[in-house]
Image (tube, rainbow, N blue to C red; front, side, top):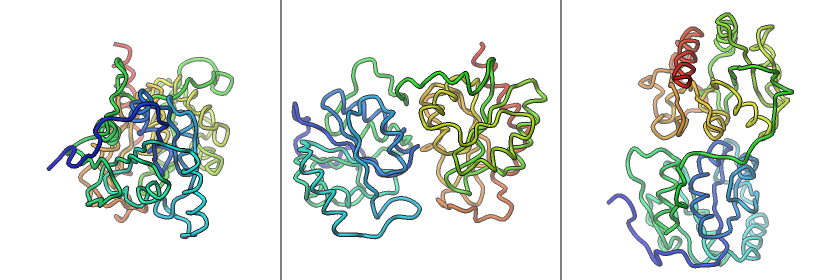
Length: 350
């Protein structure tokens, strides 16, 4: 059976503080934004997230407070299980006096370890999307519909708990208004290319990124290259003499400002692609099929996906490409990117 399959107390209680939990990465937390707003239409919201997602949580409309905790069952290098650390989190949650909690997870993750801690903290009403029988850990057990994007699945789970969005909420990704970044990018239109990715299997090769920068510049585009503090060597190489190199110069809110003013953002399936969608900018998505595009593609904005979605690595969730030569992405050329950028620019102008 699909959709909501087991529930106790279908309607949210009035007046209680709500906890929304999304424990993994920056992009995952951004995708939780529409569901967070749905909960915030009924209750004040605190968000519990991991350290990689905390900056995104602070950017989401409707979030009043952020708790940061690194779970031993999340991330690429999870911490060890430390009883005192877990006991400390349970106590923090108990003191928060939350009346209800929504646990958000990806399609392949279980919410039940989190639900156990929330139950120990005395939270009275807990809901999540769960393929596994939850025993007494969940009051609302939801089963996602097939083919739903991660952002949509999160909203569905919130709705199963009775958290309907505010009238007029379009359900798109959204962040708080970012700052003016024209002093960084300079005047005039530009295209952003973000060469990094959270996992090597999702990244377009540096030489392909550099090729795209050169060809975009030759086609008359100003190009801005973005990256984190640890990616300065990468952004410097990719930028060459043809682009503005902002590697290591943008925090999350500043990056949102840079992406908001771009004509198009070119990015792998990583946090900045979702941040571009959250500020309404079209995306050329270099999408490795290690996770399904129907769940993780840029949401709610014009987007063109490049990359072989039927490659042998499809649905493996691999962090490092298991196929020699990384053909799913590296067969995409710089000229392919230029054509996709031109198509999106023309569509926006028309």
